Amino acid sequence: MDFGTGGLDLAYELMRGYDALVLLDASRQGGEPGTLYVLEPELADFAGAIEDGETISPHAMDPGSMLRFVNAIGGFSGRIVVIGCEPGDVDTVGLGLTPPVEAAVERALALVGETIAELRTNAAYGS
Image (cartoon, rainbow, N blue to C red; front, side, top):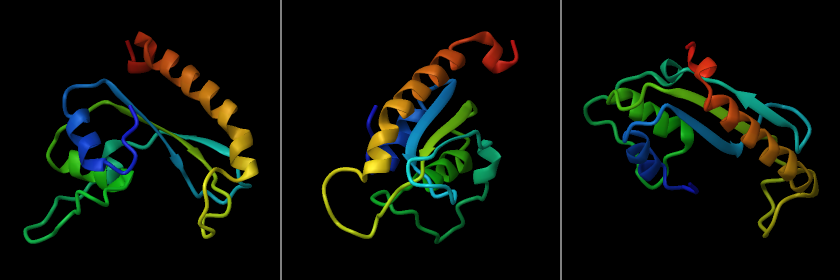
């Protein structure tokens, strides 16, 4: 599903009972634009209770904030796989992708397919 910037919608969907979450996003890791990364964070990496008086904007929930929210309320216990792409120029406003990121799209789609196929096996969950 495409959740765009709807992090709260994704949080509520995730709490419906999935075994895994595959997120696709831009991810600055320091590589060349278009470089793909497969990251497998633990939900505990997003620990931290939401304290009284603290706010999390439902309109600005990046994936990290969304996972922190889900973790704080105990709403998900599955695997998380992030397929990230090193972005190019993000300061220039425009439509479309930078050429290196555009060139990575087909590889990213193949990686998503491989990841989903692996997550559909019992071996992915230690069974």
